[in-house]
Amino acid sequence: MKIIDGKLIAEQIKTEIAEEVKKMIDAEINPPHLAAILVGEDPASQTYVASKERSCKEVGFTSSIYRYPENISENDLLNVVDFLNNDDEIDGFIVQLPLPNHISVDKVIERINPKKDIDGFHPVNAGRMLAGLPSYLPATPYGIMQMIERSNIETEGKHCVVLGRSNIVGTPISILMSRNKKFANATVTICHSKTKNLKEITLQADILIAAIGKPNFVTSDMVKEGAVVIDVGIHRVPSADTKSGFKLTGDVDFNNVSKKASYITPVPGGVGLMTIVALLKNTLKAAKKEIYQ
Image (cartoon, rainbow, N blue to C red; front, side, top):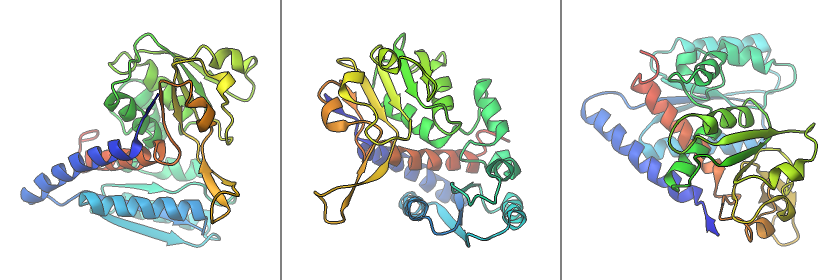
């Protein structure tokens, strides 16, 4: 069993990005500028945005955070999106999810200029990805694909089972894994809450990508010997073994599944770190106008 070290791969990519940024600065081009809109006080969102800010500094990006209270109106938030759309100094931005219930996530995402949509959630970018055209890929699937490629994992002709069908992870990763490209070319099955005989299907998986949103959902009896297991989940669960009384765990029962897997991602230290560097890669592309002229 080999651990797919998200921290190590993320650091490699950050080094590559930092070198690109240095070349831009040497050529008297402004470094990429990534902005984030943060609504409310959700602790997970606060942590995630702070991590993005730190990563930006590490690679030489400019970063800005726009913080707003939980009770901001939908219209006021849309005005903030319009402001960032029209700010030529900002190359790309994200709206940190989740948003309060009184704000339509779809409305907000659709308001973002696709050229600045470094999360890859706008319908234009989703459509371009589906058509195989250049686009900003959703950060988590993009990060997963980088992990697979940089770990030199064989995917061609393999059966990839994806647990979860969200527009953020499950659906886009299924499309990317089935693409006619190196480190893709897999036969993909998507499973979800209505799937019957789930264990039967997961036991067929050469590559199992768990994005189901339930802690320790994938147990060892659901995984075949030698499978590659990629855990997208991250959950804060009670633990008597830690000082805080909590620990982070994924969608996969790591301790037992790791005994059967050929490769496996840990939580923490896996996919989460790759999501952030994927955002950095998208922002660099936006700054260099590699997707949209």
